[in-house]
Length: 384
Image 1 (cartoon, rainbow, N blue to C red):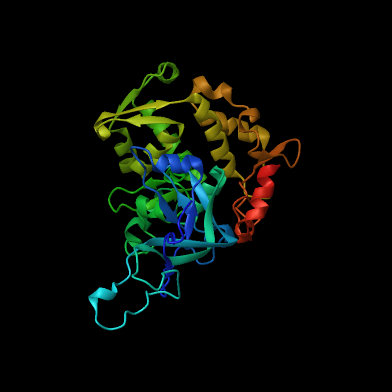
Image 2: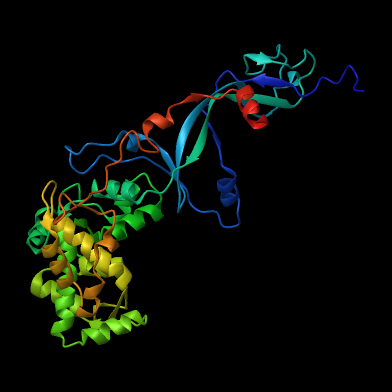
């Protein structure tokens, strides 16, 4: 039994309270941050779009916490409990002054009237906490965000803009673009690859190629391989066996002769396969037919049709086959681009675009408003 003289730990509340928010971490994120090699995490929000006339989704106005591979929404939650953040505190001793000792720096104190003892002091009162909600990965959302921050590259005729826009504030590097998007670096990278976005080497500026430009760069590469006298049947057989094909300085020649940027050609190959090598003269490429066939079909349909326009299916299929090596032309089928087209009639087809993120989408502002979370409600839910 404790004696009457055991007064517990003296507590005081500081007059000057710090502005603090407590962040509740999901178990998986807590384990990641306390591991032997914790990753860098970022708190991000969306930067203004490149064009002032571009509508901004309200969901992009929210702050998010990003690990290298995942994005979490940050939601403020009200609590009915009094939560104090404390620190050790040693009040001034009366022996240090002949004058009457002043009370501790507090609006409330449990210090007895006798000689003060070491205790604790509340330096912040938290009426709200922050919780993290995992945000499901959405390639369409990531690509939409990326497209809002980049200028369009529509083909070799766009090259004149490379010098004309040198001082434009929209000339962002890849790192700056990723920092402007409220998503994890991995999600940004996947969107970058999917859209064949490229960074122009001389100025370090990033460009978003149109569907026609992406397809044009691929066809230029295919023409270059044929012009070099390569047996495309043998090349395709090698690709199917996982072998890379050396192309020497072909991408540089394509830029010099036809105007297709080196960065774009390599981005296209990276979208449908791999490009490796120590430099342009040592480049080797590998192309995956399972990626190339549907990708060329989607890019062609997007380039050829604009809502509500459509194209004849027969015409589309013939041009699609022309975009591929002869060995892979017979792989074309509407089944491989299922979900990316609509048929206004039995004989026509048009491209179906991804839907822009909206307030009704997961992760919108409507789902992230502050809510009341009382302790008895949490307890009641845990009992179910």
